[in-house]
Image (cartoon, rainbow, N blue to C red; front, top):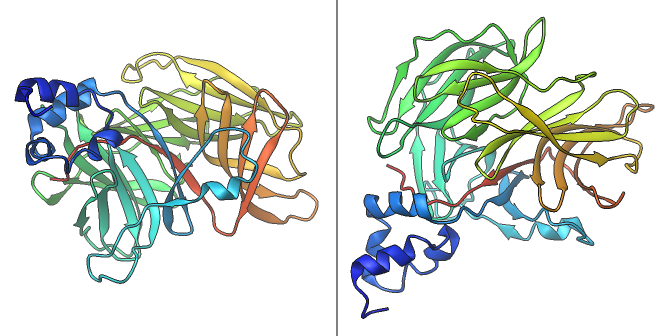
Amino acid sequence: MSDLSLDLVEEILSRVPTASLTRLRATCKRWNALFKDRRFIEKHSRKAAKQPMAFMLKNSTIFLVSISPNVADPSREFNVRLGLKDSHSDLEQVCLYGGFHCGGLLLCNTNYDGLLIWNPCLGETRWIQPKINRKRWSRFSLGYDNNEVWNSYKILRSYEQDYKVVGSEIYEFSSDSWRALDVVAPDCYIESPKGVSLKGNTYWLAFNSKYKFILSFDFTRERFRRFCLPTFQNLGGMALSVVREEKLSLLHRSFDPSSKMDMWVTNNNIDTETVLWSKSFTVDISTTDGYFHIPKSFLIDEEKKVVMCCNASFEPNSGKTEYAIHKYHTESLFVETTHVSEFPFNFSYVPSLVQIQ
């Protein structure tokens, strides 16, 4: 391709999926320079096919996993460990206690006081020091301003007391500073241990004294919003996820004797005030091991009709509780189970060339 014009090379490379493109980075200096060219990065973001990956946070480490069915031993899937060295030491591995994905970047809580922003695809990191407040628990979310030509990333810090948001701050990457957010969150409890990000905004499951709903934070307008859930006969256990970076997905596990688990997806623009839901598929979970499984996070493969869930599971008679990773299949009653010692959390990650400013 050395005889091709730079414009033609850019056009070709702008259509190569991110994970494949990064392997070409060392091919030549001219190609490597494109990784720092904002114009090319924006063009690549528009034209290249998105290829979501399944990540799982387990034992303070992030792994690349597979949600494909018919894997004889699910534990063997945890063979791709995403290494991350501590900038304070060349020897110690950073322990991650939380991961939040947005636009190709991960916001991680670590074994240090600071927050870590990480692009696993490029290997770039940035440490951010939040203000210390030991009186209230903080929830951190990553998003960006959709009005900017170049996505302007922000971090929302929500101070919570008794699981209610009582104050908020915003960190802006561009100014490297925190500021108080003059907005009042709805009077509700946030149920989700972690939120999910879709098109720069964050979504959580929440509830008040009357009903459950989805609470969202709009990083462009810097305000909270509410969205409705599908109509259920029984609320039961729920978890949120994202499908192909295009729509929200909701897992619903009824608390009644039913042995069914339903997958719902949004089928309209989530930015509008009214959200429409449709049932994607249903999974028969009657073959599970006698434990009652409460979903905390999940990923779905809509084409293969497979669900990978991270569950908190308890045995009704003994009260015994354990953590497990389950794969449910619609084509058969087979359920794959992997028991783990610490609570796992899975999420979708889409590789990106976005640089940490």
